[in-house]
Amino acid sequence: MDQLVKRPITRKSIRKLQWLVALLLIAVLLIHAGPVYARSAPDSFADLVEKLLPAVVNISTSQKVSRKGGHGFPDFDLPPGSPFKDFFDQFKKHRKDQPEPSEKATSLGSGFIIDKSGLIVTNNHVIDGADQITVVLKDSTRLEAKVLGKDEKTDLALLKVTSEKPLPSLKWGDSKKVRVGDWVLAIGNPLGLGGSVTAGIVSARGRDIRSGPYDDFIQTDAPINRGNSGGPLFDMQGRVIGINTAILSPNGGSIGIGFSIPSQLAKGVIGQLQKFGVTKRGWLGVQIQTVTKDIAESLGLDEAYGALVAGIVKDSPAARAGFKSGDVILRFDGKKVTESRRLPRMVAETDVGKKVQVEVWRGKSRRELWVKLGELEKVDQVALGDGKRATKGTAQNFDELGLSLAPISNDLAKRFKLADDVEGVLIINTKSDSVAAEKGLRPGTVIVEVNQVKVKTPRDFSKVLKRAKKANQKSVLLLINEGGEVRFIGLKLVKG
Image 1 (cartoon, helix red, strand yellow):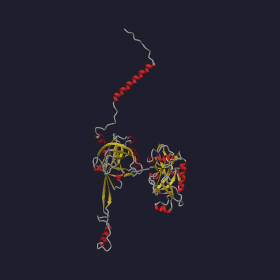
Image 2 (tube, rainbow, N blue to C red; image 1 turned 45 degrees about the vertical axis):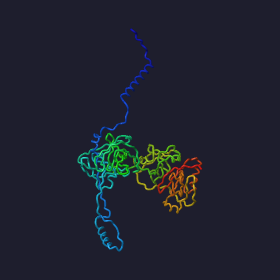
Image 3 (cartoon, rainbow, N blue to C red; image 1 turned 135 degrees about the vertical axis):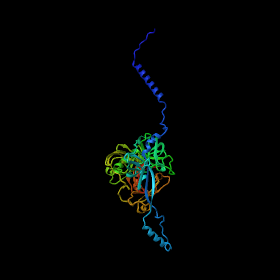
Image 4 (spheres, rainbow, N blue to C red; image 1 turned 45 degrees about the horizontal axis):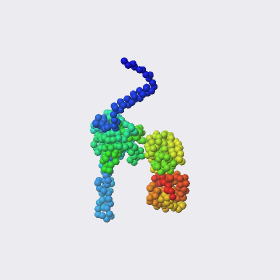
């Protein structure tokens, strides 16, 4: 019988054993895990839909509309001397003493219950101008609704109905966690067909369809038609992650491009409507525009991001905090401003009266400003400067840019229909195929600043241009006034 030879256990042999065990565990996990696939569509949405349907409502509105001309007769005058003129004059006089006939216009939409007490969310455009609002539940119960609050900027409204029994309600989901490709359900009242369910996926996020200042829509291919407006968009857990609001369509019907207000935006707005009846948004008081690559280059920014301040509202929080035209807002309240259109929403979602730290790019360096936010108000016009109009000087051509400039005279102001308070140097001609034409500059546009220096004559413009060339700048930053709209553009310098 062979004798067993005992060998000492070394650290090297222990390590080998540990590696062997680890490899075996990984192999077992891989065998049992199998290939990884994206989540497939459920066999049926029926169980989920059954739970959600009772909390989705149909909304019917009506409003009185005066019939044009009254009594079905058009308003018109007969020529003098007509044998029927006296008759129609008497008829019109009699008709004015009669009450104006009217008829009811009705429209249909959708909504959903968020509280058992009878709070209902829908779109503002569904109930806007309505004299009467009726909510129809799944069991055909009809309840009169009143408006607790509405917000035109986000197209949201909050209604209240009174019911003898507690109503079924839905829960908000987190739209920030929704990914492109996730399955979603839409329930609503398309074309008056209440309780209709459609399914699809999230096609895109962060869509700006230029319907308002806070556009951040979820795009879905779940069919949405007229009457779906105000209805909920659900994730696969049955939580509301969007409010169906708009479609893109050449014929008014669904072509698979629908848009929903994300729940993260809607929750804040609805909460304020419930508490105050109105929204209370932060207000900074700046006019902003996108930072393009040319603008970033002219300002010395390595990356084109942030929001460029084109103008500042007089006596606004921004004016009091020391903001200047030409500042680029890089960070707001500790958050990076990735693109200009994000800033209005960031400001609006910040509490009124809060003191906020803002990082700006000015003079090729970063600066910190502190601003106490006001409450949002509508501003029709941005005030920029208060100097007098320059009327002296002659026109001058800048062939390398394709521009002909002149000081603003009374005759030129009248010719190009400029407002009395417009200041700067006027573009009187633009050459085709020039760098100026490529940027859309045209006769009648006023150049207010060049590289943040005010200019009122072609000579002023030429001086700043020469300094830019001497500093080997590849482009200059122009502040222009085009029909009363003030904005910045970056104009490339052509080597002559």
